[in-house]
Image (cartoon, rainbow, N blue to C red; front, top):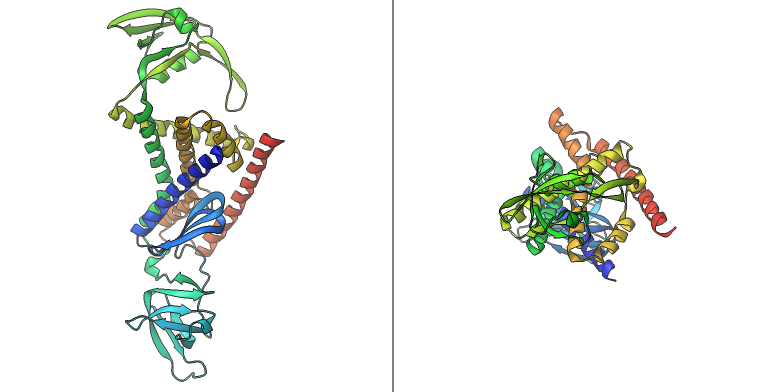
Length: 423
């Protein structure tokens, strides 16, 4: 039960932050954000606030922000349609009754002659049966369609996605992944504030009966030099040690303001690399000291996000070039299984896992594939270069095909997860 709650909270946080980025920049640009959704499929909870419908949906496989003009409109008035009109105090149409007109006895019934709800905001029509007296009805900018007793706000062109500048549209798309990176930075900073950040060169713990203890290394020693290389980061130290299994390594440490020369022989340890192949590395049995410094914690948050981003990009490139198998990918089932393992190791590791997934979500969404934020940014980039947008029908077709392929990939990955875990 703990894992279920942890997974739901983590999924909700990652998707909410991502979609919140899209929502905030859509509203800043003046777009009408119709819906902010967590999950896909049937609605299980919803409410409306400030023109936007907020929903939680059944399938936990993502989320979306539906912006006017950027989604298929299901209501289109055409000449000959019989509709009902209700008016506000200014005499403008504020409700357009598409069907079930008998439930709105006060509505003015007309047959549509012509309509413009994008620019001039009017409906021309005449009373049913009287084609000689065409009237023009001004429409309020925030009028609603009423269809099946559900309200859908109209969207004048200046509230639609396509009406905004290239920069505004690009920022609205980029904001989602950007918020995932910001979330990761914040989480890494929180972890640093709670448990401190690893020291760049100071030994914090020496394991009993380890090569380090045998060599005389002590907690508090500051590593100055390894072999002929100066040490400025913990990574400098560990990279040389890992590459020197079974070999003598000369180390210079600072202890009580004096330098000490020591020799350590790293123990050979077998581990599995990312390809699940066995590799051998050297270890000496030491852990870095942790220190609490607000400035270093801020730096640590950005540095950890950068290093994690670099690692994920490297693995993604290996996947694209065939160096990694698609079987290495994990879907919701695989992520749930790892979350279960991480939760059992403690809350800090759970936070670390959440930050890593947030970065991963940001990177994957920036991949220039159809239906992803990166794919849509690619189309906007092409528009910026050629000076005009690609036809919406062609772009929409590409995104539909891309979404179908992504769903197919999700099915394959989920099946691999199930086989790996249960078969």
